[in-house]
Length: 275
Image 1: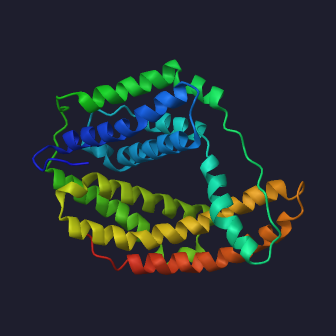
Image 2: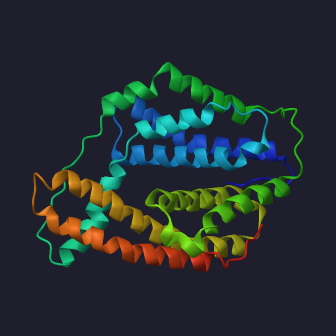
Image 3: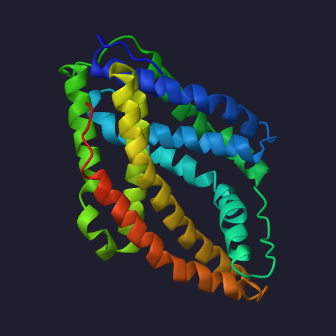
């Protein structure tokens, strides 16, 4: 997406919301019709995640935001479920486990309740939420809230988020697992937020920063996959004892990925910001 450097912070936020809705609405239409495939649901989730990131970190840019929107979007996101987790375990984790001597493993496929989703996406609450978001995105008037320069707002928001990601780099391994996974989510939000405003800065510097962020996302993502896999394998091992090997393997791998994640965060904490 492209932002004009002369617009206010509030106008920039409206453009960001518009961009997220452009990604969300075509997928929502397919889900509402009850004919969605896994990719439509995935794209709907990505667009909602981007929207949540914008509201979470740029909400101070406007006085027009409905304080209920963030939680309503989060609720919609939760209802979409995530068969994507299972797909990732099936395509990325299981083949590696089988290379290490496990018997062939077949993970049961969870059905996506398309009729239930169709009902949710055609409900009055969902329509009201979307109409509110569209009205905000396309309203031309700024709220009475005085906003300083756009880049000043960007610096304040991104400084805070960048700091959250690197704040625990030195003692990542001592954190509770839930706190470790919170950093993974913040790293993803940081990428989305940088992508939103990237057109205002030299492309080379933006890409260099994102390239340095990538190892953090990769290792934390793989680390998270091991915990998702552990939960899934725990659920199926009683019906299929061949998963005992896989369960032991992912638990043994977790400390290794924890160390790699800590190293990636420490390396990223040395990175210079571009904003």
